[in-house]
Image 1 (tube, rainbow, N blue to C red):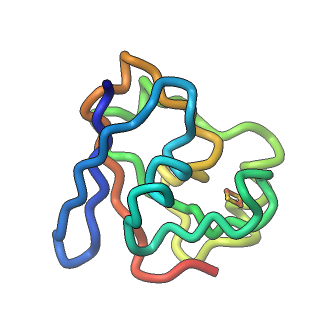
Image 2: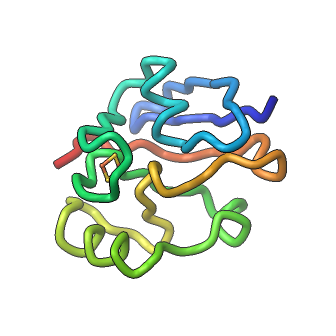
Length: 107
Ligand code: FES
């Protein structure tokens, strides 16, 4: 079972057992990780699931799709190079140990 690590700005960590095929957002919401809201239920339309993917994993995770890219531009407070909407990252065995930083606020 792949693990995903969510890190807050205070460096609190939540280590979650995720299921292959679910999204990084849904694994967070299912396990009560603070700061990931997922208001639209994973439909790529609210941006309340914004995370910063740690550099070590950014290549493996890849960049955003076109719609996600637009939403990141418009919808998040601090867009970084490794910003992703976590509902758009599907968990795979390869992503075991993925670390993402959770922004202090969501839109
Ligand atoms: Fe709404 Fe990700 S949950 S965009």
